[in-house]
Every structure is written in structure tokens, then in C-alpha cells.
Amino acid sequence: MSCETTAASHQLVDHLFRNRAGQMVAWLTRIFGAAHLDLAEEVVQDALVKALQQWPYTGVPDNPGGWLFRVARNRALDVLRRTAAFQERAQQIAADLERIADLDPANEHAIEDDELRMVFMCCHPALTQDARVALSLKTAGGFSVAEIASAFLTSEATVAQRLVRAKRTLREHRVGLDLPRGEELASRVDSVLEVIYLLFNEGYNAHAGETLVRDDLCGEALRLGRLVALSSQITAPAAHALSALMAFQAARLPARTDANGEMVLLEDQDRSKWDRRLVAMGFAHLERSAQGPDLTAYHVQAAIAAVHAGAATAAGTKWDQILSLYDELMAINPSPVIALNRAVALAKVHGPRVALEALLAIEDDPALSNYYLLPSVKGRLLAELGDRAAAADCFNQALARPSTEPERRFLRRRLHACAD
Amino acid sequence: MAKYMLLLHDDTAAFANISPEQMQKVIEKYVAWGRRLREKGVMRGGEKLTDEPGKVMRSANGQVRVTDGPYSESKEVLGGYYLLEADSYEQAVEYAKDCPQLEYGGTIEVRQVDVM
Image (cartoon, rainbow over all chains, first blue to last red; front, side, top):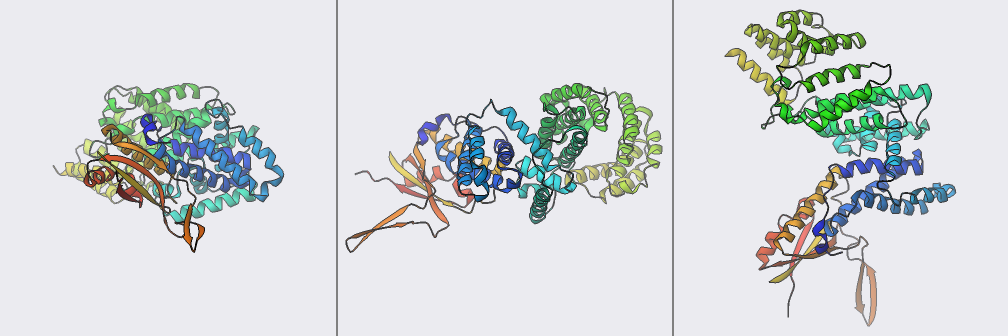
């Protein structure tokens, strides 16, 4: 095809390759069998490379996602012919592969079901938490080893090894792409949501380094959360609650950093920059999370995020509502990090002195000994009370703990303000 | 106006470890480059060559010998070509300069089409 015909070359949807990679791996793994996950990944990689080689000359085809699926299918049929392990099932597999012929949009549901099963496989309880995270990103999410390594500040070799081990464990336990049923399903959903929330938080609160936000991780976590929430196979109000929480928080990402990449606190954010589409998505999921008797920590956290999302200005924030939600959250999950966040709400409602007293209870908690936000919050409360020397001490302590570069610059600005 | 052929030699190893996300970015860059040249009205076409090594034919002592090649031993293969219109080599090179081919270890050979 000549280049002149590509005048109408189509735009690619954001993350199309990454998302399609995850979908195609899930689809082929179902057809080949879970034991052939590596083969499925190889076929998908080949299909993507084919697009990379052709599209610069031919332009992007009408239906790029369908094109990728068709090329992957043809490649899979080649593989089928020369892989001895498939001899007995070859006809069945070929028939299953052919069924993809007119993929979009009729089969979209079937593909989502494959993806969902893949997420459950990647979060199987036989795997360690680290392995679940790495495998979910690689296999379900279409991230590369290098991307996972950089997101988690570890080496590519570590991630690669983790993936090899995880796949071996899955084979040893003969884990398939089956959705668990009954009681087991509920506990498996919990484990899946836990991994998704971990992914989101890793993106939202990067531990160190220059990048404050790894938007891609947040986006992928939200995508997976919605996949679980919106599946017709599963009724999980907690998945809606988590999706609501992630959508509200993701909506604030464009306002969390200013034009210079500096961190902007919630109360100082330009709320017109919040992503309205994501806010609306958050409220929609929040509504659906109320079906059923469950009240999980995700529900309460989503409700807190909704109060912020519903406040047109920082001054208009209903802090009394937020404080009582934090009380509820402490009842469900009494963790020192939540107690710290509660102290911020306490300060807004009852003043900094009351909040400082509340901090005494968690100040020596070993879980917070390396957490820069504890001294940072304390410093801000002391500064509010006019005790600049004590506040400066706190900001120095916070700077001695691990944080990202934008966070450190933020702390230094606070420290300088104490000296003015 | 003269025609120039851009022969794109690919480094076959360059894309071995690239992520799906990066692949998409690379494609988007090529597409944007092609669009810019079409908007200028200078892009006259382009085609990709297949991945097989191809055949090389030689005649020796009256016998035609056909071998695989010419790239079977090499890391670089001729991946495809574009045809552009330009006033001079200088301008053709200017058009090719921001082709993403050069960002990923590939090379571009620029040749003017001879018009008798």
C-alpha cells in the first residue's frame, strides 16, 4: 500500500497497545491453556512488532485493535501447527482462534471476561504479594519488565526473576483461568482489590525519586478496578467503592503539581483542573458501592474523597463530615496512617492544639518511624500555633526521611517559611 | 522538482526489548512525520519490504546462482522506502532529518532518482 493512501491515517487511542497486549495475552492464554502463558506472550509481542514495522509505511489501519487481534490470531495458528504439545487439541484450538474473526465490538464482553480471569490468576493466593503485583502489571496490564522495574524502583533482573518464579508457581499449583466460585470468590476478590489498590497507591504516592505521580500506574489500577466492578460475573460492592476512591483521587492528579512540577496541597489546588469526567465516574461507582450490607474501608475512604470532590472551594470543605468518616474508618481499620490523616481533619474542626494532642498517641509508632508525613503534619500544626522553632525541627526531621524530590522541595519551602 | 528515495535500514535488535507503550509512541512519531510531509505536498509514497532475507542473484560462468541475502549475516536490513519530492539533496535531507528512524538505531540512505 502506498503512503499516499494514508492521508486519513487514524489516531491511536491512548495506551491502545498496552491495553490490547493485556487483552490478547488473556485471550490466547484461555485458548492455549494457562500452562502456555509464555507462548501467548510471545505471540502477542510478535503481533505488536508487526504493527510497529508496518504502520510507519501503511498508516494506522481503520480498526487498529482488530488488526492486532487478527495478526495475533494468524501468528497463533502458525505456532499451533509447529507445537507438538498441541497435537491432540489442535482442532479445538484452531476453532477457538477462528472465532475472533469479527472481534469489535461484538466480542468485547468475552474479552473483558478473559481479562478478568487473567487478573484473578495473577492475584492467586499461591503467589507472594510482590509477585502478584509484578505479574498483574506485566501480564494483565501490558507493562514491560523495564517499566515495572522503574515504577517500583527495583532492577529489571529482580522483576524478571520475580515473573519467572511466579509463572513457575502457577504451573506447579496448576492454576488455570477459572473464576473461583462461592465463598472462595469473595476472599479472592479481596485479594485482587488489595493488589489493585497497592498499584494505585504506588502510582499516587511514589516512594522516592523525581516523579511525584506515576499516572500510568494510577490509570491501570483504575482500569482493573473497574473491570472487576463492572463484571457481570461478580457482585462486589467493595470493587465499586475502590473504583470510586481511585477515580476521585485520579481526578485530582492534574492539579497536584503546578507548571514547575512542584507539589500542590489539596487545599491549595486549582479545583477547575480536577478531571470532571473522573469525578462523575467516582460518584457513579460510589452510588453502586452502596448496594449490599458491606461497609469496607474502601467505602469510607471513597466517602471521604467524595466530600472533597463535592467541595467547590477548600474553605467550603465539610470537615465535620470528614472527621466523622475518619472515626468510622478508625473503627474498621485502626492504623496509625489513618490516625495521622484523622488528625488533619481534627485540626480543621477543633484546631491545631487538639490535633497535636491526638498525634501524641501515634508519634512513637514504629510503623510511622520512616514516614515523612508524620513530622510534616506536626510541623504544619506547630507553625499554625506560631511555634516556628519547633515547626522547623519537625520539617528537618521530615527531610531526614525518604520522600520524592517535589516533596522535599515542598518541605524546604515550609522550613524557610519558619525562618522568615 | 526532483524525486528522492529514502531507503530505511533498520537495526533489527533495536526493538527487541521495547514495551507495547513505547511501540505505540514510535508508531505515532512515524505517522506524525509522514503527515507533516504530506501536508507540505512532498510525500510521494512509501512501502515496507517483507522481513524475509530476500534473494540475491549472480551470474558466474554462465550459471545464475541464487542465494539468500543480502542481509542474513547482518544486523541491519533494508526495511522499506519513502519517495519524496525535493529541490535538492539538502532539502531531502532536511525532510528526513526528523524521521524517527534515526532515533532508534536505524539509518536512512538518501538517493536522488535519475530522470533521463
